[in-house]
Length: 288
Image (cartoon, rainbow, N blue to C red; front, side, top):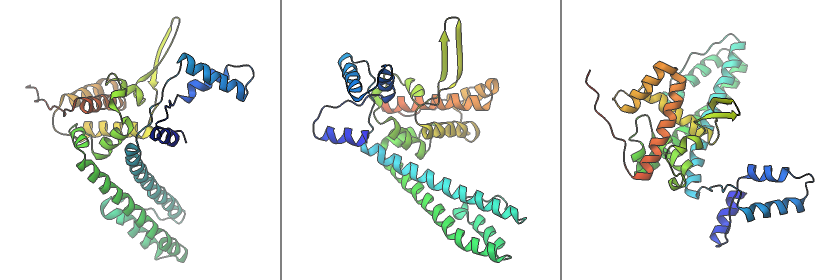
């Protein structure tokens, strides 16, 4: 309820600050005896000293876009889970379904299921039940995809972000909704840490160890950025300094590490484009 309360109090011109709950928990849990009175006193001390981190509350427009993206992702997962379940059931009867394409809302999957149902009454009942559900899930996910593409085309900011190679409508819209206010980051490279794409670091005395990425922040945005980096490295044919850097990293560090590092670089570029009002600059391929 914190998001809704913050917005409603802001509409009523009430001064309000939303703080990081983890920091408040650490401050309150340090007390020997925990009670409502002690918690109120601890929160008052945090407010008095200012030793807290303020949390940004996203705008309603950002949450609306994120709701559409999350609904599309949920529908895709649902029809994939349904397909996996049906494949497992049919294997019990010695029927192995072949891979299907995305064309016509994955019509090939439903055709194979209908063919399997023609030889067994139980499987026929399964097919009659699952085929309409599968078709509706695929069609609904596709409808949301078209709607998101339309929203991206209508947004000048999204169109500028999509000039970055590998970045499509979903990545652009999700980035806009996740970051919301670009001015809250002093430097563009801070976005990488915000999205959990920078390595963890443990330093104590003589120990100084760098680990894997922190994976903090929005997991879906992080997944989309890695997907964009993978698309840049494998599908984008046009030369750019960004792709050249990714290929060099892939040669030295391996494909997966290069994809994560490129995803962080894409996030930094997207924030710089949004903050400066520019577009991605393509460079000429160097002469060999």
